[in-house]
Image (tube, rainbow, N blue to C red; front, side, top):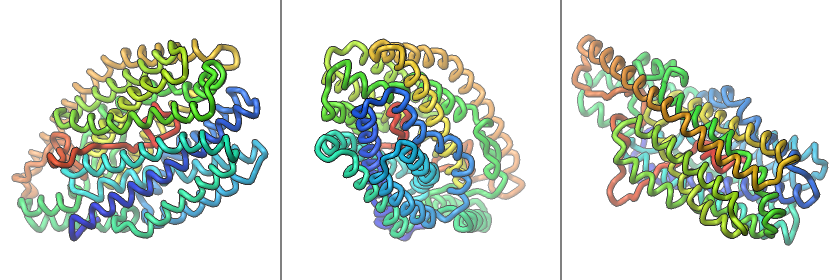
Length: 499
């Protein structure tokens, strides 16, 4: 995870972003095509929710195993192997017609996504210096948004002309981008490679006696390597736990609960647009794309705002505020007289979703040690997808007895109530985190004279984190942003990217 030139760093960032955007385009293309096919065949809400559950459940159930696998296995091996496998699965989806086989193949495809998503998310902070992370994340998020923007539009056009086979074959081709990225990326992490890199960095730091030169070397490598056992808010750097970090925990839980409240919109939307509002398949694709279109400016705007947020607690409040905006847009969607009026609402909701991704990604990169970052992203993704899954089940079941419009209104109201309920919870978590950070800083200050590192000036939570102190600020000319991943699921409110 070291670099010789800035060009090699940024070529990796652009390569990974291109591969990610290409596969996301294929994912959204296939998901939209399958949803339209089910609705056109006369399937009800439960059938659509069942398909979405097949694409979501593996991301939740396999998260602990997938995160460890991504941390312990060479990233090149994972991307190449799983990329080929997912391309083959999509090719099979294009030729099978039995609903049971379709659902099974979609679930198998999601098993691969459960591994590649945290793998790619954890690679990004390893590609660049901490100060460059917002800009690199912005590039990645922009690629994801463009891919997700194009997928539904292409689906709306292609399904009407060719049915579902052509979109699914295109999805199979997009997964080959993962193979190309795995072969060409210079940055690699996971397994013995990460362990060796971490040990070498720690040894180099010890030999330098905590000098500024050693700190500069760590910044150039893109991670603040520390010796094993340094305490962080979530435990030691070799034993970090989500439940021990109050800010990360409240961010994950609040996001998951709000998504559970409003995630049913993903099942309801196709029936609301096609049947209640009498929209065409092309209109459905355009409305779906509007959410992702809003994420593009929302992401860049949120990064500029994040530069003014001087602590991690402010980032968590930012997450809560963006979730409130998403819920409000869902509530207002229930009042529209025509499908086209959904476009401006979805643009605003997408902008808020982009901001949510910015704040969550910065918080995770700052507070989680590098060696366990894939596990943290997998845990966050599992919570988000779990919330989406609950929303799919609730939305699909209620759609059988309640018309789409009141269901959408109810989802927005519940989402806003959940956000309000979490306001005091976030306030308590910020206070707890401040006390925990103070204790960590005190222990590190007490230990510093004994090991000769009194002058390091490391901020709280420094063990293996991507950034320290304030959120990393991009160069003024970068116009930087930070993106997810975090997952990008087809549940748009999730702030994640998956199938």
